[in-house]
Image (cartoon, rainbow, N blue to C red; front, side, top):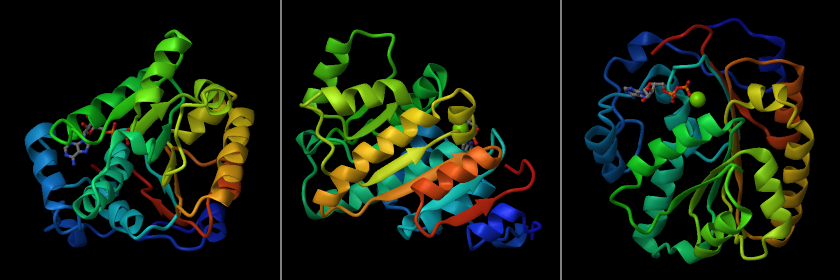
Length: 251
Ligand code: ADP
Ligand code: MG
């Protein structure tokens, strides 16, 4: 087990990692929807979960707010995309999901480059699931084009903070009343790049919406490093979170 840091004490539970536990681990044994497991293998070529995926996916599936602290390259993208797609597959099994339902999950990323990387992974995952629409918003495009995309409906949206805030405030056709997941990927870099104020505003706008909504929201924060700024963001955005960490780069 890794040693308890100050942050881990503050954020209650820490999940231990033990190589033996993961020896026979598959995406199925993590509890993921069979259809998603097939997609991961066939479309992404992923046969078994990485360490951080094996630890974090079951906790995230349970609905808890989670802070994931693991180095770059450990597989954090799937840590949050897999549970989101899993739950939307289950929901669609009961009641058809339509792009007009608006945005179910919002992934905030620091840069255009990461925005495209996450979007490309998501796009591959949703290839055969036509009723789930991936989308991105990251500036560099005309607002009209972005607005048109949001108007048609984006089920899982990847965005940089500045542009997202702009659309939250000014694009009335952007439907996010069904928002169930708010995810901060590379939270340390988001804050290093000076987006702290935008993030706080986004939380305020989405928080005021949540008061009127019956939808239960799960917030997730992923970061390669922990520092005061990341801990502050965790404190203001996560409720009774579980912290899951790898102290070294295990894949
Ligand atoms: P991080 O966000 O922690 O930096 P990524 O999610 O970008 O990590 O994943 C790093 C690399 O590992 C990517 O090339 C990704 O395609 C690959 N990868 C992720 N999960 C798996 C897996 N379960 N099996 C094989 N490769 C994986
Ligand atoms: Mg990443």
